[in-house]
Length: 65
Image 1 (cartoon, helix red, strand yellow):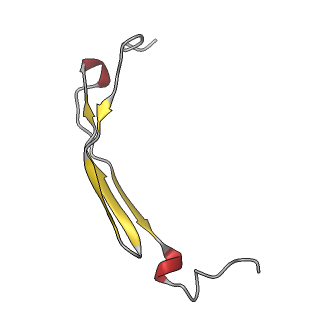
Image 2 (tube, one colour):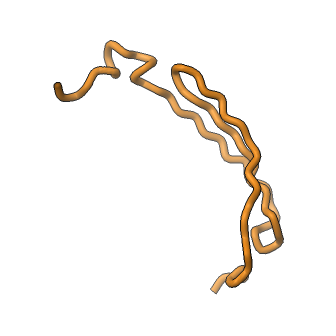
C-alpha cells in the first residue's frame, strides 16, 4: 500500500517541442501539484529521427512491394 493511496496526485508539464523535416526534439518539466505527487521536478528529454526523410533512397523504401 503506497502512502498516496486514496489521494489525488498529478503533475503540471510545461515544455516545448521542435519539429523539422528530419526529426523532432522535445523537453519538458514535470512539476508535482501537491505533496502526494512528490517533491522533485523531473525533466524528460526526447529526440526522434525520421529515417525515411533523412535517407529517402535507402531507408525510405518499403520492405515489401
